[in-house]
Image (cartoon, rainbow, N blue to C red; front, side):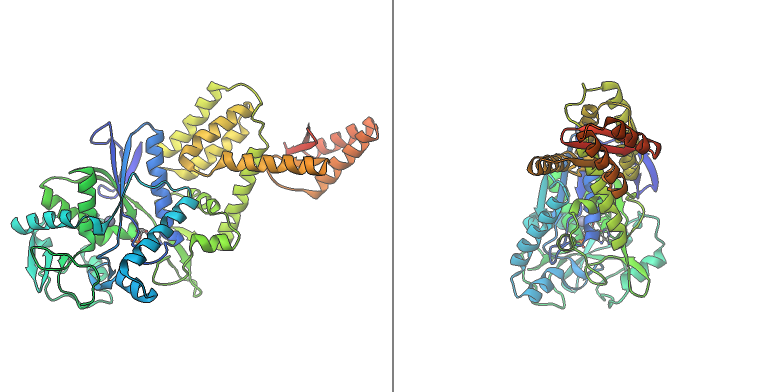
Length: 488
Ligand code: AMP
Ligand code: ZN
């Protein structure tokens, strides 16, 4: 499988350090508020990566943190702890806020068929790990104590900017934007490993440490949690593109300085979900500004959360994706049509056709082997419906693809099939189904007229109508209690 690596800026052939297990780490949510559907785009694509690795035969151990302390309002260690801000907003304790929004996050993930990682670890559970890493960084001169906080000294590194897409001047702006510079820092990009002093003395969660009572910085949590559960090396580390700097850059700096060797081989970043503002400017969806859309809001507006998943799969994870209601409407319609087409397949039709299944699976794997090209994988899904083989094989192959795509294709199609059956039984009358899921009143009227002719034993008229439809490119097949049609 070829997988783009932000650290090398190339699509490299993916080879895990140890073939028996792929070690994968994902930056988890900061649980001070609901996740928006932009955050969830990242989690959907990371879910696909994990599931495809498993599909391709790898054993995967995936770890994710829950940020419940230390992520300040600016990614550059300035401002207030986001958790504290959330607690104040809702008049609750930090831990109540963390529990509520962690549960909300996993409930959104469940609606989007995002699997829960093998290990989910809150940052507040691993204070000892952070203290161990920071102590060694202090001993080896990579960290220093100033003004009450412990900082990582970025000047000790030969190469700090590992994701070379940035240049030092751009980063400078990113760090300073809207925030005062911390006078304790020796170098502009130095970052806090452990806070004992901040402008906000009411920090709720504090622990004892060799440097005084305080709390960890945001970056150290991902290094500590990853090493606790995955050891000293990592195959894949994922996150949204905004995490590349400073978060992942700082994770690499502190982890490799601590370990004395390379830490993670693949850095996989998902590009943003963007929204258009009223002024027409396009910007990333964010928790702090602009339109904030959640899964519950989509549901309230009548959308199936899996239609949003389908929408995300139709574009490549390394391209930013613009959200609009029109785009989501289109995705929902396509998704419903897809389900209707699958519902029209007959599970009892034919014996499993291995050759057809192999050919179809090869297309699917080729798409995902190509840097996780999910839009081509969706095309491979439609190829199954068009392929010249029996329905039983098509259903088996669709079920196989859905181990990765997780669109609940077979379950939803089975429900739809049952609904159709019930309608027929309840009404005891004639049902017309289109294989594509579309409805066309003109075609349906002719099919009904043909049925009336058959009932009246006027077979010549029934055949005439069938031929007329055929001439219009519509093929009709009789099914129990009705007829099925498709455009040919
Ligand atoms: P946070 O809860 O802010 O720590 O973010 C959780 C994840 O969502 C991180 O991996 C972010 O990089 C990612 N993320 C944030 N905003 C967006 C967005 N608009 N589109 C895609 N991913 C995002
Ligand atoms: Zn992280």
